[in-house]
Amino acid sequence: MTPSKLPSFSLEAAGLSLQPASFDPEVDAQRILDALKGELDPYTRADVNVILKALDYPGHGGQNPMRRTWIAVKAQSVKVSWGKFSPKTEEVAAPAKVQVQAKPPEKTLTFTWIVEQIAESHLNDRVAHLVRRKNPHMSWDDIRSFVDMWLMTFGERGTCDGYIASGKAPTSSILAVWVNQKLRQSTYHDAQDALNREYHGLRTQKEIFGRKETGASDYLMPGAELHDPSGPEVVWEVTGKEDGPATPVVVDKTFEEAFDPAQISLVEDLLKVRHRRTKVPYEKVFSEAVSGRSLEESALIRGCSKLKISNLRQNVRSTLRDLPIVLDMAYKVLGMLSEEPYSTLEELSQDLSPADDPAQSCSSVREVLDLLVVRGLAVEAKGKSFAPTDAGRQACTHRIL
Image (cartoon, rainbow, N blue to C red):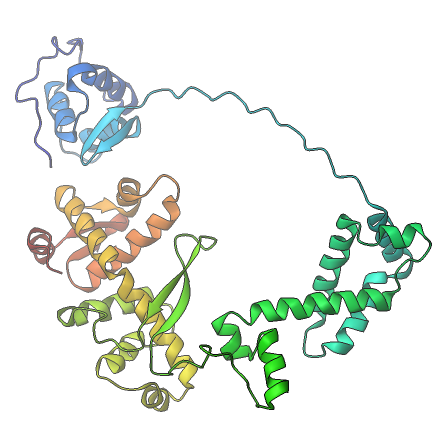
């Protein structure tokens, strides 16, 4: 615990009356906060304990009045740094923003005509059936969604205003031709993605015409050859929340430089904790990869496909990338447990969680606590509280898990 900056404390100097403490945590917490304002701000828990002792607070007993009062003080404080707090201040509400309603766009003649045709003769269904004849491999839901999107786009742009005004409204066959053209353009664009090329066989417009000209079964543009199956891969990884930005990450199919060999047991324990609710033995998948077994050998041992083993190893790589973050949080949790043993998950999460996503941090702290328990560095007590073992205190001091 951080030592107090109050070696001696005077109730009169702090402005507290000499009347006995009420032993009501909320009342006494407010008196203590008033005493800590000014030169004594920010304050630590040790400072609060000095004041409590000056008020003749008992530090033991079934209710533990000193701890209850500290919790009340902490609830009315804001953390400014490690172990230091300041009283909360009332936030001034920001002025309400003036909501400016956007003017709805004017409906075009094409939009009105399409809406009427859908209501009267199910124009979108008729166009979708015609599009499906040219694309039997696509699902009905995907075709309907694509047709509806482009019909509304034609309506917003007023694509057919001139034809409708002259009494020559487009037929469903004409609309189907236009939608098929948009679908092919979308396919050509998707063919620029490596995963679509490899797993769905998509090719760009230039490659398709090149195949017809050369007669090759699968013509590829120069520089677009298939990659080496044993070489590195580029995957898109979502960072942060599930709807966070996706960034390209180069992953190696081997584990030669992905981790410190001295931390093999730590990685295996983390895999057990992270995937304890699944029936997949990720620690064995990791061991096979470390020993140099190929995808084919691992697939034969597990009785599954190479793609399945590749996906499992990708999950292992994700755990290896998170290892430095997990270690940093583990040292912080051990330090907090050494300072305040038998802290609960909620208390630890409150001190470690970012203000924007406390639930995510609570889940991470729970994973770290389970890892510490599995490695014998912490024990779980009654009331879902945790305390460090002697090995845990040594690991915190020497920073070796």
